[in-house]
Length: 151
Image (cartoon, rainbow, N blue to C red; front, side):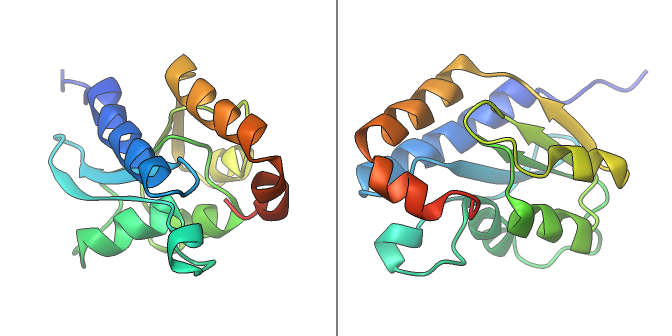
């Protein structure tokens, strides 16, 4: 039997990215793209505020940093927060096979749509991820409500 990837260890890479984004003054959402064997291909964080660029979501940042791959079906996108429609579309467009989510409490995103389209979705229900973003939302309601639905 094939060993299951260590999704919790993968999530810690995304959490470190979220904390990096927060330290830069941005929204604390991080992501990383891995192979099924756990090799890190690229990691990134939400930089929409820092770069005044609405397209720099955590998942797109990690995806871009991973560079071109022959196939994405055997890749794992790990993100601290359920992906928005934009990032869910990226997952479908490139046929990323698995999405691991730190949390979907603060934002549910397109998880059911992804599942309905054959993507394996694993929600780890990380209290750390819930807390990081909930604290940000509480302290920055105007930013979060301005951007809701965009991440």
